[in-house]
Length: 562
Picture 1 (cartoon, rainbow, N blue to C red):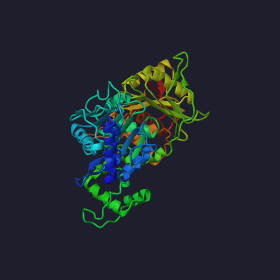
Picture 2 (cartoon, rainbow, N blue to C red; picture 1 turned 180 degrees about the horizontal axis):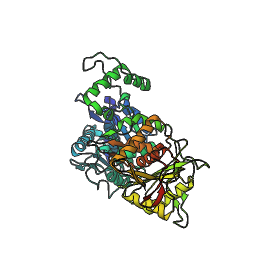
Picture 3 (cartoon, one colour; picture 1 turned 30 degrees about the vertical axis):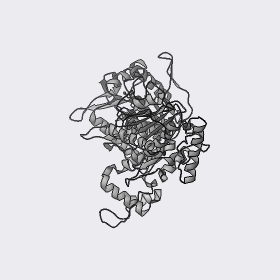
Picture 4 (cartoon, one colour; picture 1 turned 135 degrees about the vertical axis):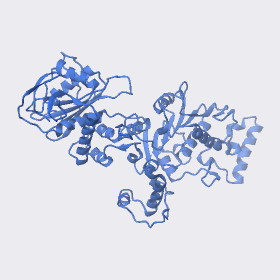
């Protein structure tokens, strides 16, 4: 609390004097500090009282805390699980550190840890904590037991704060922690391992704050923030765009030009109600940051997550397709026939059940099937209706190649003997072998869209040599099916239903040197499976009979999908 008048200061000293005369410990009469008792260093290089700025006030409202940093009934904050994506220089670290400092300093047996991405930033955050303590009024100061470069401990209440960098996977293991501030977690190299340990160390009554600017797609923070937005996480997502801060305005363009809004800026005016001063500030910042502006000062959560390469699929088209997505219908697990496995398959989402007389195609991307590893891709399959080009079912999980072949056979038979196109890579050969020889799934019918897809191989004179099961996984063939998928996405001809498919398309990038794939640790198996379904949809059916040709699994008539 602030003691603004002489009478208030005199009253507190009189209370302490009475306690001393009566032989009691005057520290028990210590007034507990609140937010306005803390002091910060300002941008103007002065030391001032912490008065929450508009963004900080907004966040306190989200936390349902008063401007004292407490619950409305005066109790301390408890059970917060916050994941915050924000623009730069909003003061979130200052506020979160203040809340954690007060909770630690005012409550016995409280242990708090502050973690940043590197040593300089860790030291910077700890200096903020030290400044809070050093500038407390004398009647609010507890005696420090430990005061080092990385720890402050108050022995009278057995509470303390320590700091660490994100370089060690052992951070947070081996004891109970009541408060965690994870700063710029998107830039941590081992965020999944570190946060996994920390979250197990914090009881449900404890508080965890993760706050950061974005650092591209495919990292742990991106995955966790996305999960939080979808309700698949214990964390509550918060996003704060740059235009919420009243300081982000300017009167004059730094390039000296007269301000006339562009088409993009007119769209921002319509979408967010931006003023001319805000747009001038934005244009000035873009001159400084170039293409990094959306990452450092995002207007919405989607544009915050930039990829280091160029997006393979048009972002606006992906966002538009998201509007087509729907929740799957209730469905019992797919069952594999007893003669093969007699088990129920989890991981299948269904939007439309099979309908008599309808034709379907299945695109399938096999994987190694290692169940316990997060490093390997998943098996993925998509069912699309031929007549409507609607994604009607999606299968995703980790199975070995034999299991996946049996599952595809069961899925294809359920959808009216669908045409199944499997990517023909190392694992794909094993899946195709099970699909054809063990499950007895027929080869591609030359007159109807059924059976295992047969890919036509031509010689250098473009003469048909043979047809082999599965789609080849060479660089040129991948570009072919990715470009097909990009085209149907932009044209809006494919009706997407699965949000995860589009999320993987959003993280799919072109890299320097001609490579392409998922950014960071993201997966791209769903991209492959839906693209292979599009390959089948894009092909025109031919009913013309041709001579037979030998293939590796037997004989089949030429013709069909080409």
